[in-house]
Length: 438
Picture 1 (tube, rainbow, N blue to C red):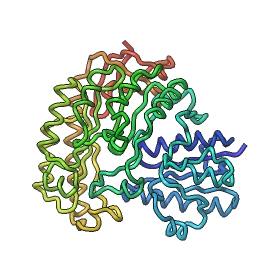
Picture 2 (tube, one colour):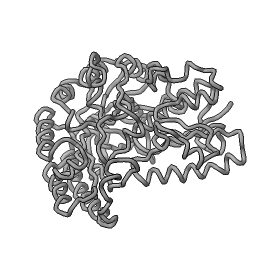
Picture 3 (cartoon, rainbow, N blue to C red):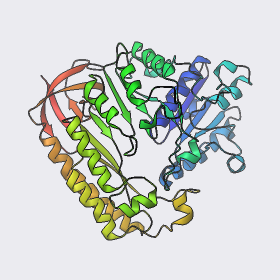
């Protein structure tokens, strides 16, 4: 039997894309292998959101040249944001040993290549819905069946908001919501295969349905998925302050399966920087949203994203971000140093004038602050009983998450995979907790 190998870098959307590609390849008779050397088809699913991710993709790609030289029949497929949705002429010239170039979320070019264009049922339809290859009936790759507890389920592809620092719109295309019937069917299919939790994905997930005026919005979609038999938990990310409305808050507060955890990036705490980023809100707006979330959904955890060193960011402007984080005491802060991406507005018009060592210093200051805040928040769980959905076993301990997305480790000889169990927290740290089964 022929084998395939997939290397994935980047966001949860890429993880979901790779999972779905594996499903299609197995429907064509391929078998997964964890070793690139053993594969007949190698797929690199790439990310270019940060320069480091792009460099890693180029390095990995170059490492495949000897394999292709050794085995000319090996099929090499470059996929994802490195390819994007536009002309691939430069990539083809630079990497002539690559056989197939696939845009994000689109297995069509590879499947057409492998079948010589005969298996049209596997290709994306002319409507442009890149996920119509699944028709809502996804079968998990064989090596994941019976083991995968939590799955990321894309509901919005692409993005039309276009923040000045972001390369996603040019690489993944305009915003496109998947049909609700297809999403619900896929959720049901996953639940039937033992999946207990789904996380709905979108670059701005709150904008689900806005490109389909007659269709449901995110709140309505969540209410529909809450009725899917077999699912225990539903999450969604990433939200945006401009589009995260009270209808979504009400849905999280009211539905038993929708978890009380919101990922809503601020990116910077200074209004001038936010305006240059084209985020569309102010620091005060963000503070009001956090207050509303905490009033409507008591005990809800909140995560944010922050970029330090955006062009022109002064020390005083950075300190606005620092004090915002200090005041709001959010559960998680995903931090990044600004990295200019080719073709973005910020790369074209704003010089990358914050020295790298200063970016690192600011990053470390926020990292230390968030470690302190996270440690203090998690300390309140000590001795408390919480419900944990267990996903897998890591280094002899079972790993799972609370409804508020806190990472918990438990030692047990039982098979806890896929179970939701009450545990008592016995130790807490800033990033995780330890517990015993209650």
